[in-house]
Length: 189
Image 1 (cartoon, rainbow, N blue to C red):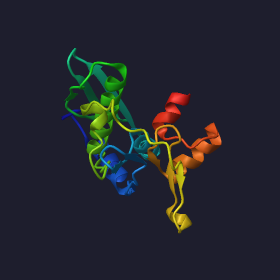
Image 2: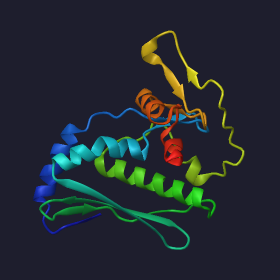
Image 3: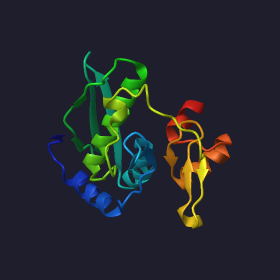
Image 4: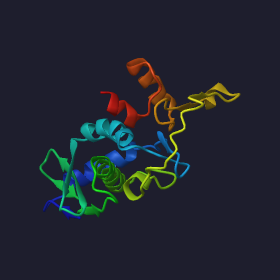
């Protein structure tokens, strides 16, 4: 980890930020590993207003070295002070745009969650970055599953079959007219 010479102001800001960060609820499911996790979008949507309120802005640089995807995350304070992570290197299993993009997102999510002390998952979602999913079953049945208790309603993406949080389902229904996970929403834009 690298920091500016002085870190008094950013340290004070980070203490305030940590006081505001509450438990985050996973907003996506990994059907391959049958696990839940918080997406990078979910973390960013939650944390950006808290960072801005405390005069901190986030920068994540992703680059490649020909073999690995590399990510560096930096928190900058308005005073000019900063905290920067070491380079996180991940090797995608395949060299195609989908794998590279997934690997970048995965590395950014892990590094940001670690830097901010956020537990981003219940279980491992690294299958997109580390496994060949050509045989993955995209089960589109049961697009919306209701349980006996309406407060426990479960939603599934109509495109890929992933479980999605109620707020994501409501947003996608209003914006796209369909229940879509965040990844599928991105592909619709």
